[in-house]
Image 1 (tube, one colour):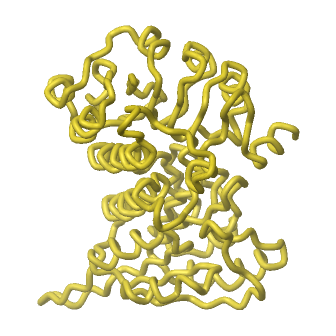
Image 2: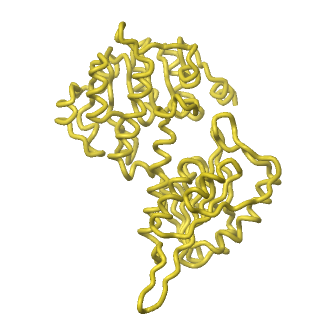
Image 3: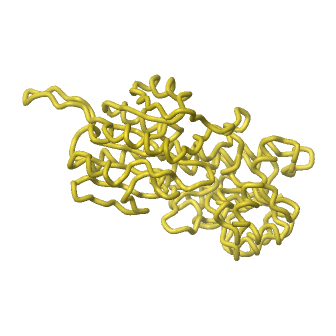
Amino acid sequence: MKLFVPREVSPGEHRVAAVPETVKRLVELGLEVHVEKSAGDGSGFSDEAFAEAGAKLAGDRPAALADADIVTVLDKLTPDEAAKMKRGALLIGFLDPLNSHDLVETLAGGGISAISMEFLPRTTLAQKMDALSSQANLGGYVAVVLVAERMKKIFPMMMTPAGTIPPARVFIIGAGVAGLQAIATAKRLGARVEAFDTRDVVREQVESLGAKFVIVDLGETGQTKDGYAKALTDEQLARQREALAKHCANADVVITTAQVFGRKAPLIVTEDMVAGMKPGSVIVDMAVETGGNVAGSKLNEEVVTPNGTKIIGLGKLPNRVATHASLMYASNLLALIDHFWNKEEEALEINLEDEIMSGALVIHGGEVRNEMIKESMQK
């Protein structure tokens, strides 16, 4: 089977869906791996390194797409490019199918199967394949580093002959993978950290990292079977905002990570809450790409409010550490392919009885298999 790794072409994207280390493993499995020339330049992996690992360098992107049995991407292909793939081929990547209906229709109409990495079930067996978590982990780290660079204070407490500098106060909203990594990074830098999440089940994890867990009585909340926070009612959101306002006002840094899978991110930090923060404080809205948690945040912009609070709304945070982000994503893809690889036939096996495959294979045999995607296309 031929596997093609194209160069990512979305604006500002530096990551790549394979690295020399994973190419070597894929070749050992029996795949013929083709990597588009310069695909790894943005993440520090040269064409020479890919060639040494056993990849063939592809200079003709359309021809490589048309010839491949498997195409692995980080960001989705355009519908026009997807149409160049051959019938029966498999596309794997972050395909954003809930918002990319033209792409979904092109793939289904062309008889192309698609595994959307967003839809991998969050099970123990699928943990090595969980690309959402691997990228969110790095995003949480990057968010804290961005703040450290921009804030006019230092993170740790420092006792000096000139007096004692108190530690920065960091408040993190949402204790999923990104939030937990943000907590850990802020603590390593010496900050005093508080965190809030609607799911009480994450309290132990927050406290194990040395942060204080903020408790807000919202009534019945919880998480989905896949580990995502359930959407709150309007009344719960109002109660949450009122309780969180004072923690934002006391914080030097607020990092928001709250997202609801398949839906617009909830607005958590209102305009009044931002106005109540201290001059020079910094907010990072990690949900800005899905609508934003913070009033006034703008995608790929840094906004300074009238009271001197800076709101950072930069997207694709893992892209800022593209070498390790590519390594982790490529490892996720390798784990997925290896799990379904039939060694005797030297082919990737589409096993619809498998829980992982059943959840992530959103298009197959000319049909859209996922009910969420079907419903989104009917709206």
